[in-house]
Length: 102
Image (tube, rainbow, N blue to C red; front, side):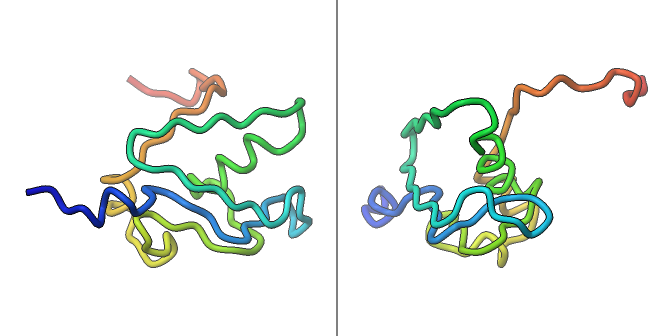
């Protein structure tokens, strides 16, 4: 029998999240929540912070403030392998082939 509690717990959510570079916030107080199988679209002009939000959630950038949760657990308390079991990220930035070996 499926756990009904997990159907109501967001897979990923943020609370009072602030993102930016060099300690300078670009966007403050971000609150988002996505359930299992739900799709969220970030829409805005170039340079508005969409990729910065995603990179912060993916731990490529440090959050300046606030909390990111995966299934109601603070992301900072989870190991990299725990996070990898729950989340995958594919960004559209091109990979430089000169950094790859075969």
